[in-house]
Amino acid sequence: MERLGVTLQETVSARTYYVAAGLVKAGVGMAIVDNFTAEAARERGLSYRPLQPAIAYDINAVFLQSRPPSQAMTDFLDRLAAIIDAL
Image (cartoon, rainbow, N blue to C red; front, side, top):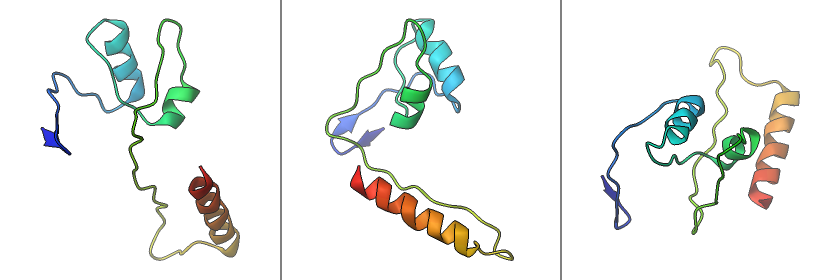
């Protein structure tokens, strides 16, 4: 797979951090995870480093079409967006 001039040779992929961390601990290689997961799931024997330049990605809120967000939820999402933008 190539993107932005970088070619990745994926040998194994995992859908959860726990599987990815287990593979790293077993010496299979390294895992790329979001910074929230990396900071929240520090494990003995594992370390992490931020990628430079940083990788941007979208964050979305999901809700039922038949039940749009309440005003409290809309306020929360607006505040969350402001915090994320400030990062």
